[in-house]
Each structure stands twice: as structure tokens, then as C-alpha cells.
Length: 84
Image (tube, rainbow, N blue to C red; front, top):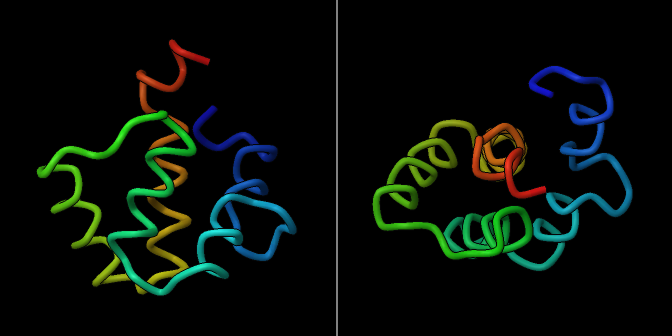
């Protein structure tokens, strides 16, 4: 799944209806974006360690690219692949 065109297209803010787009339209708060992506993708809140790593990514890449990168990572986690 990692670089599948379908997955790559669905994570981008430019795609109407993507989770990333919906969250970025609702808020600019990195924590709210991170929690929203975890809830939408894995159906649970992130741990403190996951929040720390994700915040660093958001800080380095900005909200849009950070959210897209985080969404990609969550969709490629074994937790997601084995559950869905």
C-alpha cells in the first residue's frame, strides 16, 4: 500500500473530501489535526509519544504537508492494515 496511487491521491489536501482536507478546513491547531487523523484512521487517540512525534513533523513541514505525511504513515501502519 505504501506508494499505491490510490492511497497517495486520497491523502492530499487538494482532494475533495479527504480527511486531511476536512480537518484543515476545521482547524489550524496541530493537536486537533493529529487527534482527528488518529481517530478517523485508527479509531483511537494517539499516545503521548505519538503526539510528540507527530507535532515534530507538523512543526517541520507545516500543517498541510505534516497532515498529509501523518495520514500516509497511519494508513501504512500494521495496525491499520490488519484492522481494515
